[in-house]
Length: 415
Image 1 (tube, helix red, strand yellow):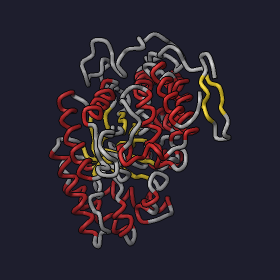
Image 2: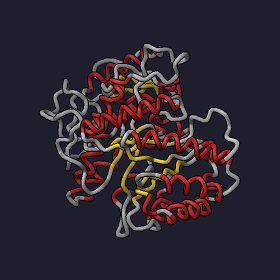
Image 3: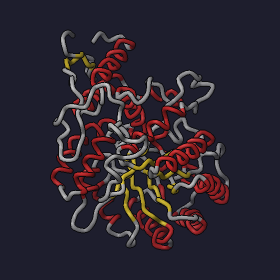
């Protein structure tokens, strides 16, 4: 390919010419994704002139509580085989400051950070401590994942599962952060039915120091979580989930629902006790769920807001003014990228998220914890680049193009 085009490989084995964007896009409330141009191409990703690190120049988002589940940056100088959870702490914390600078909260040590897919509990605990300290220093909002992934052998009793949850809950609370009680593979493998879930979660809610977020992660994100809440029948599982919440509404700040089923989420949020929030985790249908309807809306805790941070913040600030049409005009065009990144097998969406962070200049390499950079095909990554570039997600389009060409060349593609 010649001139200002790049040859992007397709699933059919052909190269398709694509003309990359030449100027960056400034994402501001009320501007469309392909609109206003003008940020200097050398500007730091996510930075605003005169803004202090970690402080949003636009202040907090007002109409919705919005978290981005954040990825971790691997340390490429340390062997993935010898140290599968080797983290570049400076780059990882810098990315959290980028998210806070946009006005977003950080959902830490969640599945986007490769919990259960390369990030082990010792590394997750250190991540929680470091990010929580950074949040305190910068005034950023943070919530941290609590699970049972330190159990390396199958749990034999519910008491073992509960104790594992308690250990992690203590780390989060000692760090001064809000807890997100994540779904547990160990509990899913051991539980005989709904009563076992009620027993474990009721115990944890009774002893939690502050209200927590309950996280229902569907099997499309983690096949080991099939049948969570005691049934493969989602209607029955929903009743158990609501039973736990209804018994402890003062200990539940909200729920995060990641089932990729907008209708079910809407029906569920309408049945929540007053004061309990619904945080959408639906990376397929988030614009309509965040906008809401006459009976309510969802807040957000989304992995896709990792690469979308500036654009997502601009959209919610538009919504803050009451401009729902402007909100949708900004956010609706991003759904195609999100559906692509979260396409089956959905659990590998982290690869696309980290790939886009590399192209955007948030990290110097495309290496992932546990070698997960190999989980998606070259055509998949190429299409992610095209969609992200079309949305204006890269602060320096020339850098993104150069890195895309490097990846193609390494894989034997002359672009």
